[in-house]
Image 1 (cartoon, rainbow, N blue to C red):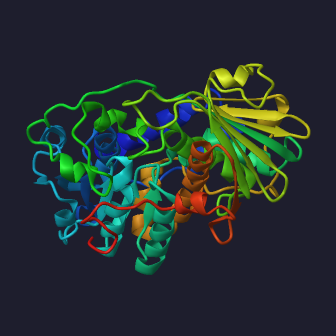
Image 2 (cartoon, rainbow, N blue to C red):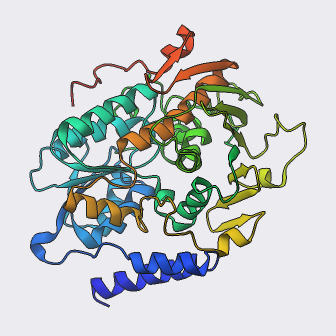
Image 3 (cartoon, one colour):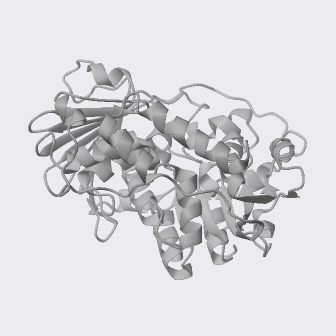
Length: 439
């Protein structure tokens, strides 16, 4: 197949697969809405650079490849860079992402790094006049998100946060049904996330050849190399991430905010606790936790690891055995997760929304939406403000759980109120020489 016919085939196949659990009327809508087409000519192709060549970075970039040419790949680990070169043998290689930003031929940067590098890479790209597709979670702390939102506005660049559930028609439909009160007035949201890993203690070992361990750590505190700190298991260390609360939580809490209409705002309080102590010398991000957020309209939003049931009287709910989102309204509920959606009122899924209904931003492909917005300069489905607000909920949950108490949040001023210790956690100290001005 040529690129165009292959892409159209995959697009149609994806919608057909989704239609197995999507109502026919909504699946037909998705087909009619279509998606952006691949490059129309050689002059229309984008210059793309990948920073962070792990499995996720390579996978996302392969999704962008039909729309442009991958001109550069960058990673501090030669082994990961070599894997990227297998896909794009003509791409130039770099270990310092700042050199990538000097390439005039690069139009868009895909950031697939570990979490603690997302903000600095995205800031450098936007300041260099590049558009950015940045993997989730968008930031390591709340303060970083404020900086990204300001930079996107100041530079006029496009930033798409990689919370791809925004472009899954199943999640969009669930949000539209909730917003249009098909389950009555929204009262409660229950988000279930996979538990994290609880392992250790770990021993330091020699740094692998070709791996710049100091650069990988960046602004985080320096420690001796431990294999379990890097690559896939980095997310279980609080120093580099927030555990599954920021990993999966950036997805599911984003959908919770979208359905509730708080995607550009947030809760007014967060209360949480960890449910099991971590092993000394092992992973440091909480593996099991229970959190509760409250909003100005009285909405209650609980977020729990799948083994947690601290707020339901000790009874393990059926939905708590898997991850996803449950919306409880005054008339019924909707449950949605990847590949599945159901409701206590089955007919609301099969009855089309009226023409007067509130409809949400249509994106049936996350990378395609980014490419379309790079060309059109319209706002993508998940710009920095929305990505920042979604992960702010996660950061508030992590802070509340680590402190083991309730914290008050002002979503308009974006400040933790009346608790200096908690407020200090909205930012993180940066190890020199790294800071926001050197990129």
